[in-house]
Length: 630
Image (cartoon, rainbow, N blue to C red):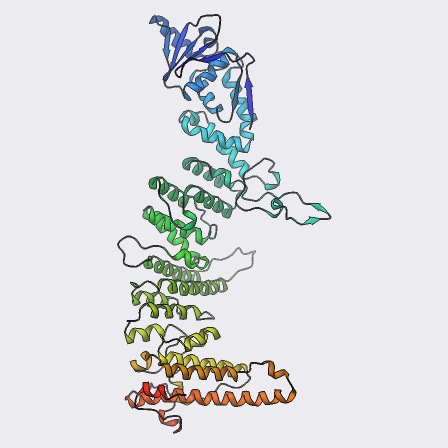
């Protein structure tokens, strides 16, 4: 910290109680100066030689035949007046970043100008400020903090503006020119941790991080911080992502519980001002702040009941980079009075806004500079859609645990992203399974609709195994899973996809857009039958047979060439057997449909009677038919 000593005489100011100051001297004091509640017993001559204002006040007191004068409105109060008085006496006084602004404002109040005496206090303080304080990073911050209690004097004397310019200039300087100390505990660089690699046996010089100034500024009060950030942005030399880092650090410092997505008890009005100010200071560039940070701000704005304008701005920005969000970020508590645990409507609006933004981006893509390569947003857009679809799947799996979540809401959100092509449907399967587990009382038609969200062809091997054994799924879904798993194993073994009769194909998913919607008109019983123990046992057997014959090379395949040839024949036989058993299972399910009087759709190319007699045997009901499958 920089400091300046003024005067050379010993400090002879003494205290007589809390409200009295006097100068120890052989000469009796001849004036009493009342500053607030403190009385100063002083001598006229040293004071009047340097202060034009005291000259006027003493002159007026002489006319009133009194030796007391009152100056209750001096900036800095008794402490600042004492500094000015000691300077008048020539006593040693030390100025530093903590008291220099108060002394400067008090000297201005007392009119300690050069016209009164050369080398007066105002001149000396201005030299100290310009030559030392404003050249120091941390001193400039300290001085700026002290100006808060000295408004409007510090503003009118341009101390605040000088501090702002000094801080902003240093924050905007090239990091290679930073030679002063700063606080940086947020994340250590390799060089700062002592893990930086050596080059030719010599350790490289420590690298200054681009956001080195962020933590020191987080100590500022809100209004001063706002002015500093505004000044830094106006200089235009700091990237928007660094500004975003600074705002994030400030939120963590000033909002207790912000990192956990909640605001803990305290001055809620103060916290509201912090959140609203941060939102207004956010850089306009997309990606300058993380989506997680924006969602935490949204949660805080809802808790603190911030203005609609700020919340609308956050929603707009979040929707533009929704693909960066995590499921935990989206778990926003529902407002008081809502029956659901989480604010589902808020997330649905975010997804809707994301889709609108994507559509607008495709319809009117931004053109790059003619000297630059023109980039199509299509690839980035498709990747964003896949990420958002995965995000929604995970979110649905979490909120499905809410017993008060209506199926219509679950379906609406899931169907919004159903057109987004994604390689795996494990996420939506998990969400469906969780909803069925927590809502066992849904109707047959609802069960049918929710299961149609899933494409059995896009389930992983682990998800298929789980689905076949899942008692909460309709038997029809389990059968479809078994079929596609068998097709996958058959294809991987080098065989062609089995040629199934049209009646069986009618039970399988149709269409080219990857949904599991059947092209047939199916009975409610087909969709909503729940597998019995015998059904599950039969399906497990099919899957085990399938995996055994699916081409997995085991230890036995390495025993001998004869064993290898034998295993090839066994695999072929197992594949054939698995296909026949799968056909039987589908045919029996179809047979129960035919007996109930259902007709297949026009897209079915073969009639139920096209299957052979062995494949179409069934018991009088679908349920008993499933029991007969071995």
